[in-house]
Amino acid sequence: MKIAIFSDPHLGYARFEEDSYKNAAEVIRHASEEADLIICAGDVFDVKIPKLETLKKAVEIFKSAKKPVVAIFGNHERRAKGYVNPLQLIADAVGIRLLHGESIIFEKDGERVQIIGMGSVPDEFAEEALKKVLERCALEDCKKILVLHQTIKDFVPGGEGLSLAFLTTLPFDLIINGHIHERIEKGHILLPGSTVITQLKKSETAPKGYYLYDTKEGRYVFREVPMRKFYYKELKFENASPSEVRARVEALISELKSKEPTCIISIKLEGTLEEGATLGAMPKAEDVFIENRLNARNLKERIASIKELREGKDIRQSGLKALYEKVRGKVSFDHEVLFERLVEGPDEALEYLLEQG
Image (cartoon, rainbow, N blue to C red; front, top):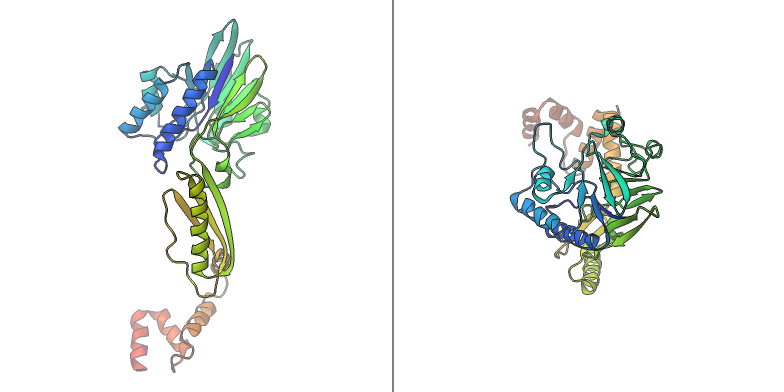
């Protein structure tokens, strides 16, 4: 038996809405040709209450599947108890088997595969919730697959959630996890990643698609699905003029767009501008995103300085020094007196200034 596995299509994602529909439809089309069953590991939608146009697109996309579809809901679809989950709506409309704390057996040519699914729960409760699901779902004597949509701490440092150490103790032949948009393989634990670009960072340049899992052989392969090209580039500068920065950015955009006219481009600017310079408006082009980190070090130093003040440094002396730097060589009166009047209030400061003419 062959099972296609994908995750996080984020249908209706505002920045690249049409890509979210097209990419998901292509994954379903390709998977239908190869697999006996299709699994989606959550975040079918990008928001908890999608617009009607997005729901209509979702129905069309999943109706096009020529093989059965099993899905769980993700954190973007999770709603409070008693409220309708948007995935429930299309599941009922197109026959998707939606799992949350449930188990199903899928059979083909005498082979049986048990699939247990748990939709997204708050990360702090994930391990306990999963243990309860496993107590409730009797494990069958066949291939077993677990489908989740949770944070895995090993891949998200500092976050709460499940750990690889815990997951590897569970009695499953394959564990599928959504939520993390980067594609990751860790033994029998698979993270398919998202089918649409949602974060303009380097890891998103990796191919997107789905996994094809052969239950008899216990092996999986990744199947890339052609999608719009995404470029992530970093440009470094040292004491550059704004015109130099703009020229290099324009040249890079022109080069990449000549290769792939419809491509998405993310450019990160790092380093320093010449003293006193500000960057100003940058070149604009469709689906081009520029992150300006120029002079970030100076900004970092200023933030550190503010932090020092908050941690108990002499605020009065720092303020007095800053005022002196501003008025040095421009006024004849005593800047310390002006500072004291400013501390008292704006009216007192104005009165002092008027006294000095």
